[in-house]
Figure (cartoon, rainbow, N blue to C red):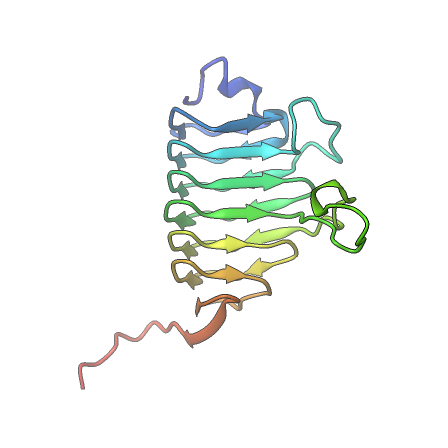
Length: 183
């Protein structure tokens, strides 16, 4: 799918030069999804505002993906309240980003049947990179120019220009504009 097609017209915005590769796994409530210019979203991706087609939504801009982004194959971006992915953000394959989680307070009900936890917005800053299999949980802000290592689970905010790894992800160093020396 690309800008100018009938299917792309269903989106709140589908920028010129952008591409959503086929096949996709889930694509719900496109009117609340905005995709910037020159962004490529790989195949086998789930991209949704809400959980089911036609679900009443809180507002008309639930998921925003900026300009010149690359979303890796098999990734899932599932927004209920607000997910903002900045410009020039790249992800590896199988990345999962959500702003809502299951409730688990009641012992008398299976977790899947409980009221969900409150939605908390997610923001991923310009120029960041998320490695293969990264999970970003509700309420997280990832700063600008952040590198998150493969398989990491981001449970709390990460500052601009940090490098984070692990589960839960923790900052292991800060990036700099200085080239690293060999000795």
